Each structure stands twice: as C-alpha cells, then as structure tokens.
Image (cartoon, rainbow, N blue to C red; front, side):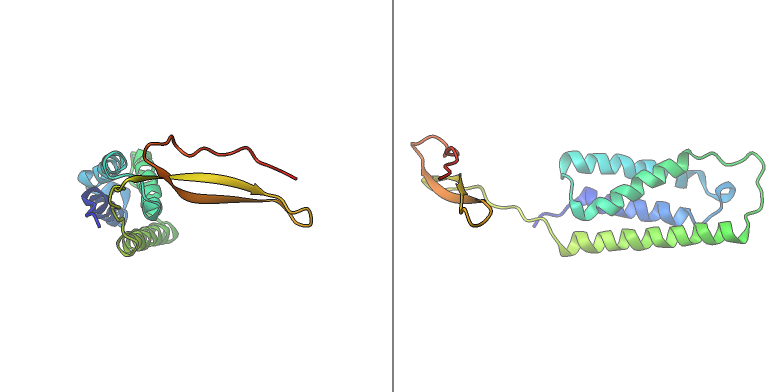
Length: 162
C-alpha cells in the first residue's frame, strides 16, 4: 500500500480553504483566497504523479467549485449579510467540510495496492467466446488463459454461431 502525499495535501489544503468560507468576503484574509488555487495545483500534480482515484472525486469537485467561487468579485461597498446569506455560507462550508472528511475516509479505507509485476515463464492472454443458445439470449464469455512465452499474444477468435 503506497502513501499518497499529494492526495493528503489536496485534502488538507481544501479543508483550510473551506474553513475560510466561514468568513464574509470582505473580511476573508487574502491568503485564504489563494488556497483554492493551491489545491487545484496540488490536484493536477496528484493526477500526473499519483493518478486519479474515484474515492477522491468529491474532493476534485470541491476544488473546482472553490476555484470558481474565488473568481466571484466582492462588491466595492461592503453590504451587510442577511441572516439567510450567512446561514447559507456557513451551511455550505460545513457541508463542504463533511464531504472533504468523507472523501478522506474513503481514501483511507479503500487503499491503493501496488500489484507485483507478473513473473514466470507464461504470459496471460484472453479469449472471448460468443455462446449462442437459440432458446436464450447470446452470452459473451471471457476466458483468461496462460500463453506460452514463445507464442504471440492470444487473439480473439471470430464468433461462431450455429
């Protein structure tokens, strides 16, 4: 099982950025606005180095949403937030933190394993067989087989129907 440093970094930076959304836009520190973009850079590095994982899909969406929210400009004059707007901002941040935590839980409980490279004198090939029974629908059966090392790759035979 490999330790995925960039994956963990994306989650930590994303959580810090989500905490920043608890603050109103005019009072939000400038460095918190950069965190979403930092998470995006880490996410792209994570894609290139460690690879995409379906367990991290909610975090990927939150990173994209956080970057889009930072593009929204604050009004020149600071207006007072209504209670509904404040409640929506806090609820969104809490929901985002819950999704970030759930994503971290999935990433830890469903780990990535490094399978060893195949070894031995035989290669593995596949064959697809198309089975037809006139009283039922046709089935396609995929068979894994050993291919002797001196032979070419196993190829799919043409389908035979009776």
